[in-house]
Length: 109
Image 1 (cartoon, rainbow, N blue to C red):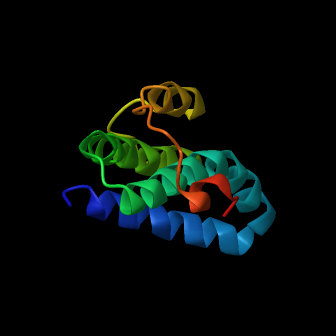
Image 2: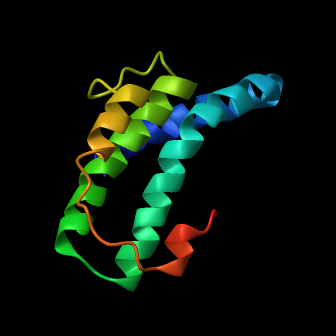
């Protein structure tokens, strides 16, 4: 919760910029989509089959995802950690390997 003011400031900046330049916002958002979709799919699996390793991983990954949003949409607000699409991909490779048995995970959201 200590990062909430930064997130709100970044959200305000994004909203202002999106209002004036929705196409630019859309292009930036496209960089975020694969990371958010993977995160949400793992959340669905976690809800269906609770797993402490997945829970821990999601707890570590979410702040990185939020910092990536800041870096994309409000870069003048410095991120607390170094983050990029490549860094998120590398972190995702650390995700616990669990069998995919939930139908919702297999379907595209």
